[in-house]
Length: 181
Image 1 (cartoon, one colour):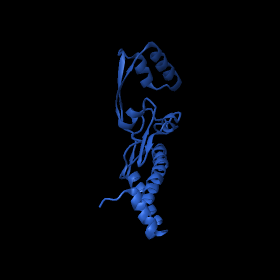
Image 2 (tube, one colour):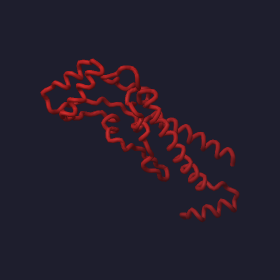
Image 3 (spheres, helix red, strand yellow):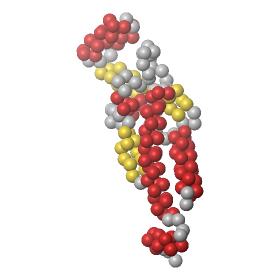
Image 4 (tube, helix red, strand yellow):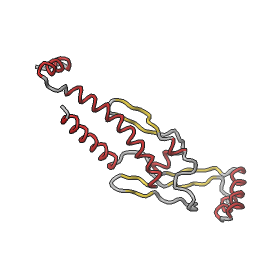
């Protein structure tokens, strides 16, 4: 005989049996909140540790123009601060960012940059400011477009380390909730 959730709840009340459905629903709701906060902090920590944690820490490749004054992928902090919860439902949390350059940094890829007169003026400005020859070469190039390879510097996505953290929380919560019955 198949019983409805309401019938099971009535049976639980009459037999002093714990309401397992209610406990499971509360656990899923609490897990959604916990996972939201934990994952958001986990993704933002990538900017502090300068790498992606999956089975271990995979450091991000250094920048070509690394002068040691700032972290990789951090100029204004906009990319890190743009990480948001895009969707949250029962047992599901989806994260994303509205930064247009986030995907190419997270996954790596090739971008093309047009060399306009304004860009050439900027390259000359940077050459005058820094004295670094690569700015001069960019200003003098005959090309009207540059192709730049952006290495993968993952900061958001699936992670075994994050999954283990969430699994540990679930196991601990189940144990705590059933021990207090």
